[in-house]
Length: 68
Image 1 (cartoon, rainbow, N blue to C red):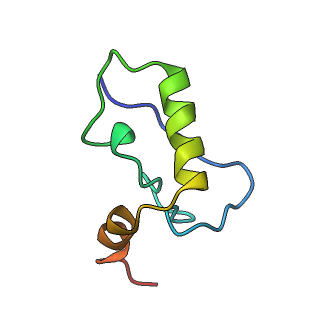
Image 2: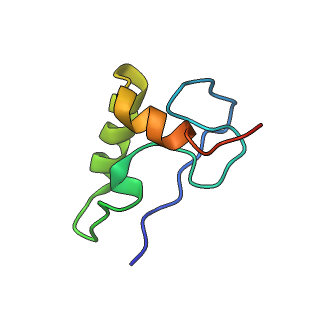
């Protein structure tokens, strides 16, 4: 199984989110740490945590190869 696709309906300007890019949320549970045992509450709590607490290491890895 593949992880769910998540997006924001309104533009969200945050260091952990790339606007207009597929798989733009910098959350491991939506990428390499996905498991079919994960529930929607786990995904929503992970997105909430991303918005509340910025993980500098994950953000710098995500933006390393990104060019405008």
